[in-house]
Every structure is written in C-alpha cells, then in structure tokens.
Image (cartoon, rainbow, N blue to C red; front, side, top):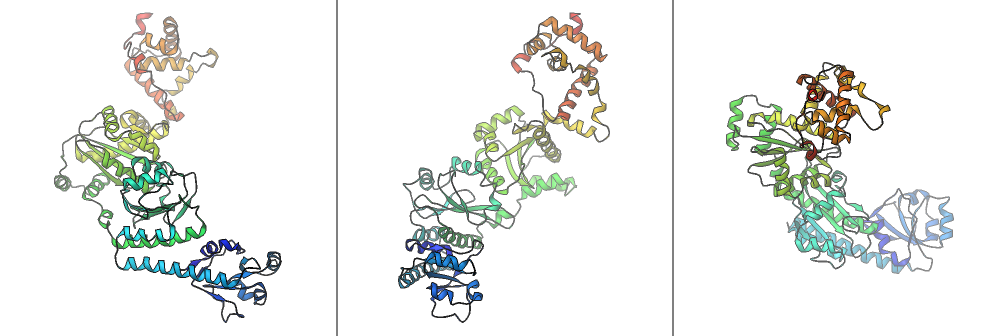
Length: 543
C-alpha cells in the first residue's frame, strides 16, 4: 500500500506538524528520502525531508511536483509561500529531522508489513474472520464489523465493547437486529447505498451515536451483498484513519467479490421469469404458461391478490432490505415476493379480503406500515382474481392503486384498488372527454359562501353517502333534522333533479369523485359508527 499524506500527518501529530499542502492536492508515498541537494528527478511518490534553507534552494518546477517535510520558522515559510508554489508539511525549527525520519521509517515499516499480511491472507484464501482480525492491529478497540446481505456478521475485530451499548449488542447477537436495521433504514443508509460504494464518513448524529465509515457492496446488477463498517467508539477518526480503512475495506470488498459466494442470486429465479412472462406478455401461448405454472406448483384456478411496493426515489438497497424482512416475517398459506423493475411484488394466494389482509400483515409482520414508513415506501393492492393467468390485470390494478393513492392520499401508505377503481375509470374517460363537462358544473351552484358554516355541497355529499339518511346527515352536519330536510328541498330545486332517481344519485356521486380527482385529494368519509345508525330515508316522506 501507499502511505497518504493524511497518514503522515497522524504520525507526526506529537511533533506539532502543520500541513501547508494545497486543499486540492493529495499525495501517496512509497518511501522517504532526505534532501542532500536537488533530486535528479521530481518523484511525487517520495516523501522528502529537509530544512527550510534546502527548500529555498530548489527550483520551482521541483517544488510543484513533490511534497517536503521541512523544519523552519512559520512566519518565514508563510512569506515564502506567498511568492512560490510548494507542497510543505512544516515542523518547528528546533525539531531534529533525524528523530522524524526514524518515526516515519517505523510507521512506513509497520503499515507495509500490515498491508503485506492483508494481501497474503487474500492470496491464501483465508476466512473473513481472520481477515477482519488483521484490522485490530491498526484500529485497536474501534470495532470493525463485516456483514452479509442478511445482516449476519461474517467477521468482527472485537467480540465486545464497553464504549457503546448498541454496538456491543450487535457484537453479542452476531447479527443486526430488526431495531438496528430499521435504524439504518430510517436514517437513509439503504437509500444512499449507491453513494456508499466507497468508504464514507458519517458523522453524528448517527443511529449508533458515534462516527462510522461505511462500505456498501454491490454486484454488477446492483444486488446488495452486505457492508463493512468501523465504529469509532474509542478514538475520534482522523483523515489518516479514513485512508487506512479505505484501503482495508477495499481489499476485503475485492476478496468478497472474488469468492463469488452468491452468484446464483444474480440470476432471475423461475418464479421471477414466469411473472415477467405473465405481466409483460412475453409468451402469449396459454399452454406454455400452464406448463410453467405446473412446474412451479402454482394452482391455475385459485384466488390471487397482488401487492406492489414502490418508492418515490427507488433504491435497490432498500428494496432488498424490505424483501428480506417480508420473506422472514409473513406467513400466509401462499406468499411469494420478487423484485420486478423498480418495485417489489407480493403474490398472495387465497380469498383474502382487504381488511383481513391488513390484519394478517400486521399479525405476522408486526406493523407492515411501520416498515413502509421506515423505508419511505408505499404499497398498492389489487382486487382478488380467480385465475393465475390474470395476474397481469392484478399488476395493473396494484400499480393504479399506488398511483392514485399517492396522488389523493399521500399521508397514507397502503392503497387498495377497490377504493380507487372509480378514479381509474374517470382517468380513462379523460382520454375522450374533459371531466369538467360532466355533472360537476351544476354542483358549483351549491357553493354557498354566504351561508356561514353550512355547506350545501357537503350536506348533499353526506346525504348520498349515508344512503339518504336524514338523521345521520343532521348529526354529521351538526344541524337540526328539519333544517336538513329544508336544505335538501332547496338543493333539488336548484339543481333541477329528482333524487329519488337512482341514476341521478349515481351521477351525483360520480361528480363528487371527479371533484376529488380535480382537487387532488380525497374527502373524508362519514364516521362508521355514525353512518350505521340509520341506513335509509326518503326525502319525499318528509315533504
């Protein structure tokens, strides 16, 4: 390995060294050398040492290319740098260069010996724990933890730590618990996975309460393989430590790739290929699909419901995390989960009602909505279909539920097509006509801003939604029953309609749905306990 200037500065910390290097310049050294005159060639891989007098004697072309540790007075060196370009690390004038040379030689030897051990361990095909053990030689009591895609620890540099309770819990368990992986997800680490493919310093506040570096592993198609991290519970991380961990983590990453331990997971499963065929109509021949279903032991004429989890900003790390949690938690008679494009598909078999589905999900998973909130996702569910070969329709329904649910009720996380199909129908209608040309125009006549808190528009909506219940409408509107009857009479006269006609009532209800679609949000439904008190009424009986 090469020694970065940040590592050199760490080694010279007790010498009160001051970096005068340009912020946009970095150096990596292979060896050190004393200045005994002007070097024959300027080699940036050599760390030179000398006095300020020797630095002033060098040509500008050399000074621009190399890095020099020099001793001298700071005010004189700063004055020199105002007129010359040089890459300097300054030591106090009274420091002996011989002592500094000995210190640097010791550090270079120690680190090169360590890097040789790391590279030799890779060549010999050692285990991951033996690899991680080598990290303790450099990072001491700061735990290094290496996990796989299931968040099980493959290796850790220490078995326990008294400095951080949460890190100690992970070490004692041997894996990241649900609480810890949820904490990772809630702080967006999975979502940022594509930006954490190289060691990244994450400063407090963190989910562990200490600085950490993260290296997320990705295969060629982005499948999450695991990560290596170091928690600085004992020492505060310096730039030199960051460079050392970057080298170490990258070596382990390359070794992990070379093992090819999970290549099979990168190949689509038969179920994933079959779902692609069904949804995208890759194969139209029914006999072929029936044969595939038989091989996969999927009943053709059974009840199925499809769910889809989507994200505003898709991250494969988050999707893989969600799939892993669902696979180990849900326990339906038949449940499968696959990755499909930039979403997660859930396939349920059985005649499961929407309400029952939520109950089952919560029972076997422990708050499905909580997982969605942690990973900033949302879910759409289709209606029940009676044939496996109709799952392409179920997929469209689930996507549509998620689309309109997100548009009209973004504060929620779970959406069912049975609640949003009417908006899907209206959206299709807009391909031929403008929604404003429907019955909505007449409803605007009920907008009565001069009548205080009593909204004729809201009154009519509650009246229709409660099956024309006068008593329930009065309670919902906080009005007297006779006032409701009076206003309903005025509404009929104003609109010029007969609400005894079921077709008229249907058109009015559709008009309210159009208003919701145009306004971009759902209106609340009558409270169930109030709406169920009275389910029928007839306007004409009160006239």
